[in-house]
Amino acid sequence: MLRAALTSGGVDGPRGRESLVQGAHGSLTVPVPPAALDGALLGARLGHSNVVGATPVSGGSINEAVRLRTTAGDFFLKWHPGMGSEIFRMEVEGLEALAASRTVTVPGVVARSANGDDIPWILLEWVEEGVPSTSSWRGLGRSLAGLHRTWSGNRYGWASRNMIGTLDQPNGWFDDWCEFWAQRRILPLAWALRADGVITSEQLTVIEDLAGRMDTLLGVAARADGPSLLHGDLWSGNVLFAETGDAVLIDPAVYAGHREVDLAMCRLFGGFPATFYHAYAETWSLRPGHEQRLSAYQLYPLLVHARLFGGGYVPAALRAAETALSAC
Image (tube, rainbow, N blue to C red):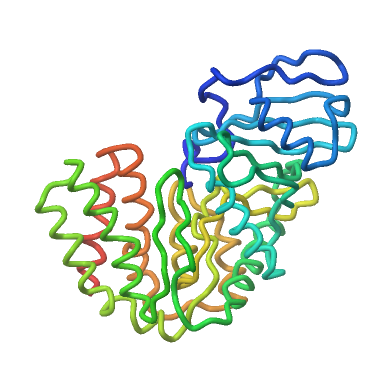
């Protein structure tokens, strides 16, 4: 999720159960769990003799990952020995939901581990990255607006839980967006942070006050827009640009929610260029007051960061909560 520490490509995890990749060119120096490599090759209908090389992919600490080079092309293989076996089932579910919208591009899923496997893994098509142009960002803005228009349901949430970073993301279906946002996004994190001693009871009270007033701030716009299919974790680290210039979205945490959630997250941690927002607004204009709602939506990823990385993110989260309260 969110910052570079939460992207999919880390290579600094446990090594105890890994072995060197054996390829057509001999022994390679990248350790990959045999179960992950064997399963991935089987899923791609390849054998060890098809492996040409494996290059570590850096940029994160959740999963370990390699660029797997084969005679049939390159693939992205990632695994996580310490996570539950369903972690990549959830990722595939999100990628497939985004792909089914026919509005945004995601990596193709080649294969994944079975539920119950000791080491979960996923094999994706490799995206050769290029340099985004102004046109690339404009295309992403239009595509995201298109994605947000595709949801045909009238409820908010998702049928099953999924994850954001390494945190559980509870879902379920709600008729009321503001209730969902408070009960499934803001309050569980705030309560967990208080239980861990990361925030004070006074700080918790501020967040709880805001949770109780979400309808005042968010309700009118959310009801007017209706539910949208969200990427759910849309920050710059989860957007790749292919050599063609096309944007490719990765690591989703999908659910049906108010479209401004994705747009608020885009503006954190460096944000996207203005071209992106202009193209989105040209495709589907935002409703009045969206700047006042921004803090209420950015509060969620800031609380996620506070849970994952500690109290350093608490001041930013509290500022967001207080700003949102002042707009109620």
